[in-house]
Structures are given as structure tokens and as C-alpha cells.
Image 1 (cartoon, rainbow, N blue to C red):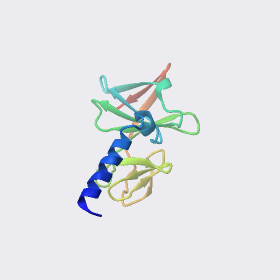
Image 2 (cartoon, one colour):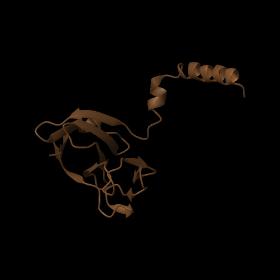
Image 3 (tube, rainbow, N blue to C red):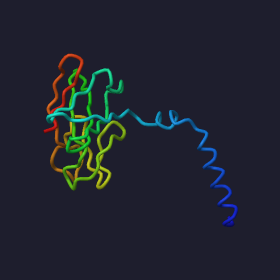
Image 4 (cartoon, rainbow, N blue to C red):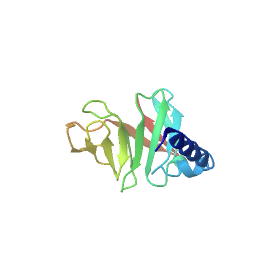
Length: 139
């Protein structure tokens, strides 16, 4: 393919993407995320804002790391830091598990190591349901 032809096709592809609604692109995510703020070491999440999938990514200003809130089968909640205990790599949800993007350490939905090289479980934050709020103690 010649340079000119490549540039023309690239511009056509970009122009086509401009017409895709943003909602369509964000709908590709497996679950939603929230941006909140920690106040006195506590992040308060309205239960109504938790994703129906049972997993909600949370990035809170004032919290040490982003974390995921997972609704457990018994109806309780876990808040798990998404920072791998092996080398500090980012952990993301993949196929129902939490996986480190650096070296592939895998954790279950409670943060326990399923597959190394990590040997230590992910950090968990204290969680309490108070009325219609989920309170996560991050400090």
C-alpha cells in the first residue's frame, strides 16, 4: 500500500469513528466506574450508583489507589485495591477475575491470589452499609 493510499484510508476511518455515539463506546465496558472523593479517609458510595453487574470500579480523590467494589454472592460487599502485590502493576477485571497487567498474577473476586507470581492477596478496605450508602474506609 502506498503512503498516500494509507493516509486516505486512515482519514476515512477516523471520520467514520467520529459518527459513533460516545454512549456506544462506553457501553463496551464490562461494568461502570465512579469518580468520587474521600472525606476523612472514607469514601461514601450511594448503593443506587453501584453497577448492577455487581462490580464497580472506583477512583476516589484522596484514596491511595483506585479500587473495585464487588458484591459477593451472600449480598455483602468487598472493596479491593487494584494495585498488584507483586510489583505494583495495575489490576483490572478480566473474565470474572482480577488480573495484573504486568506479570499476569490473578486474583479472585475477594482479592485472594489464584495464580502468581504474586504471593500476597490484594489489599482490602473496610466496608460498611449505612442506610443507602456503602462506606469504604480507605485510610
